[in-house]
Image (cartoon, rainbow, N blue to C red; front, side, top):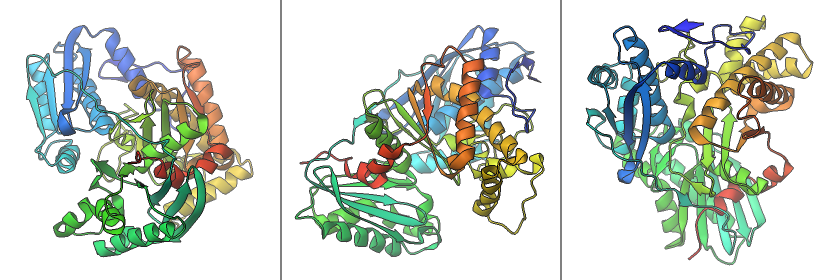
Length: 458
């Protein structure tokens, strides 16, 4: 397989996607002949900086390859860590390409607009002589189980809350709600307060509240979340601090933390494993990801790997939302199963919802249908190659694989195949990364209990 003069050789190719070109392999091959230094830094909230020093070719014949490699790298950093200002040093022509790409009307207008909204600053790409140094601000969170705590987990179809006293769950409830279709933020506020009060009734006092919620949260504020999809922009001010208001209106001045649910899943994994350096990947409606670092800290990074490129093939599948191709959501969610099923000869009725289409393939897999086996085997190959890339990005020791795509026999096959691909194609990391499925201990820790452990007590 060849693109921009870069030839990628693979031993493991998905049987249902022969054109798949893992970005990790493309990058490695590209860098073999790239000698001209090039640096990138991406600034995010509170002056934090993600910095990367790499190489390009800098020649006329490799200009397209240079632009492609750097643009994919910038996009990866943006969605892994977040940012609103991209500093580049090393080549003016590549800078000009990036500047025209991440702009209004540019190829990556979605990213340009989204990041500006998240960080509430104009997005820009600037050329400098030397990029700023890296700066992170990870925070120690979780594992605080002393006292009387509430853990709240806000999902798209149900909300869960737990009352936890000195590490023991004394009460939990799960309530169906419809946050994604309600445009009145008071509906969301009242649902959150109702859950908090329900848990508080089962404890003598409330010492701390932890919230796990889908979306992007910076300094406990809602910057973007599908839970509030229908809330009109003019009411966004009610959504920004909705969890802070609900907690302080109900309990006054108590410690609280509001964290992305992916990070809380990774934290629950770390608590159940008794180890740190955990990347949690939930393959469901989308690809939701969280990360706990080597010291058990939450990084504050976006970890939106659904938008991170994993496939360098020119005809890779397009994501309807962002408009980009080859990104994680089409490889590690129910979209991947739905994409591959027809290629395996499985007909899926257009009248079925995406979740129902997944169930059809899962049922076939439970019956050891050869067509379904090909679907899950192909996803396993995707995953093996991509985990090698995620290891380069995170250096994670453990990868916890969650979500309904990973349930049942299909999940077992995906895991088995991914491990085989890593051992065959990336033997240098085979004993450094441990992909695994959640066990009973993880299920006992649970999302809402892990959320309860987030804030330190007074």
